[in-house]
Length: 120
Image (tube, rainbow, N blue to C red; front, side):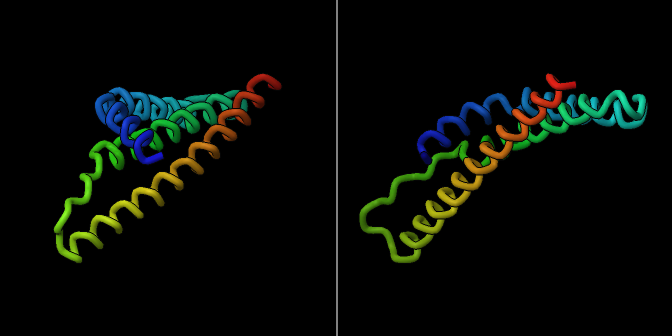
C-alpha cells in the first residue's frame, strides 16, 4: 500500500498547481453561490463545490505526504537511526490507512451528492 501511495503521491505532487487551481475554483464557486446566489436554488451546486474542494484537499495531502519515498534502512546504522526509520514507516502506514478511510468516506459522499442531483 505504501508503494501505491508513493507512486500516487509523486504524480499528484507533480500536478499540485492544477489541483490547487481546482480547489480554489471550487471555493470561489461556493462563495459566489453563498453571497450572490438565490437562497433556495443553489444548495445542490454548493454541495458539489464542497465535495470537489474536499477531494482536491485530500489529493493535496496525499501528494505532500507521500511524494518523497522512504529510504531503505542501511546495514550498520545506530539504534536511534533504526528507531527513527521504524517510527517514520509506522507514521506513513497510519497516514495511508487514514487516507484510505477518508477516500472511502469521500466516495460515499460523492455518491450521495450525485443521488441528490439526480433525484432533484
